[in-house]
Amino acid sequence: MNPGYKLLRPLIITFFVMIFLIFFSKIIYPQWPVDYMVLISAACLFFLVSLFVFRMQYMAMQNRNPNVFIRSVMTGMIIKVFACVGAVVTYYFLSGPLFNKPAVYVAMVIYIIFLTVEVRTIMKLNKNKNA
Image (tube, rainbow, N blue to C red; front, side, top):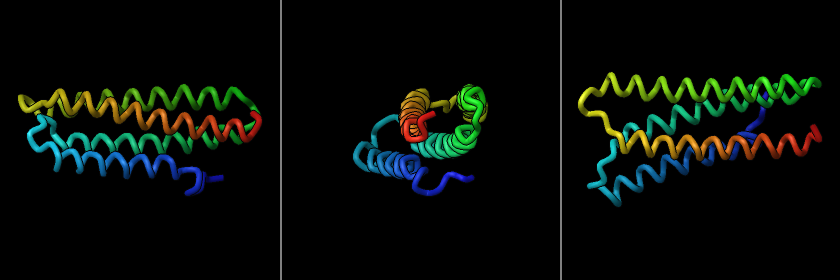
C-alpha cells in the first residue's frame, strides 16, 4: 500500500508554506544576510527526505511486528541525520569562503519544522490504527 495524497497533505502544505515564507522574506528583508538559494535547496531536500522516510514508516506500520516500525523510525532518523550532515558538508566545500552560516541555521529550523509535521502525521496514523 502506498500512502495517498491525503496522508501526505501536511508535508506538501508545509513545503509550499516554507517556499512561500522564503520568497516573502526575500522581498520583505532584502538586506537580511541569508543565502535564499540555500534555504530553498534545504526545503526541497528536507521535503524529499521526509517523503521517503514517511513512506518507509507508513509501510512499516502495516506490518504486524511492532519492531519493524521501531526499526523504520530509527532508520529514518539516521537517513535524515546523514542527509543533513552531507548537505552541510557539501555546501561548505562547494561554497568555500562564501559559506553562509545564517542560512545553515535557518535550514536547521526548517528541518525541525518538517520533522515535527512528519512525526505528528505518523502519530495520528498510529493512533488511528490502534498499534
